Length: 110
Image 1: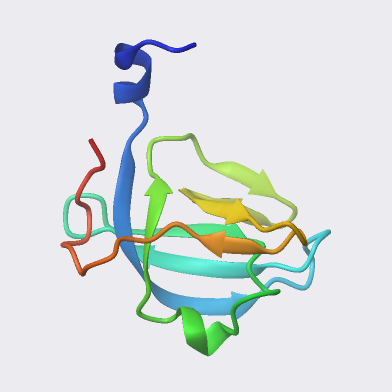
Image 2 (image 1 turned 30 degrees about the vertical axis):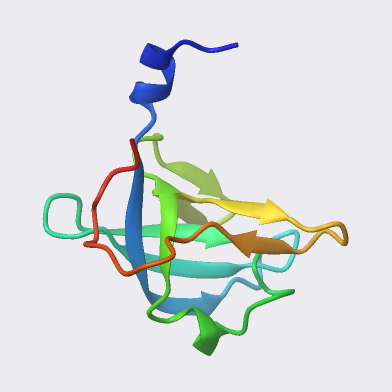
């Protein structure tokens, strides 16, 4: 169990995917994403294993929920600056965690 104070330390924020490219160097099929979190946080890069359910063109403009206060993580030749959240299906594909309605980029989950 974690405390409420522990949970409040995690910054889960909404961002919009603005760019998607292939990540051929990844061990498992993945994309490189650029996600816009608004003027306070800016644009962050992330790597995400979304290739089973999403084409690159399907992801542009989608809002996602991401952890924005992890330190950057080196993934092969790529430096990931946030963690886009997803849920694994029974078959192992990852589906994005997203808001039901459009919200401002940078809004925080509480």
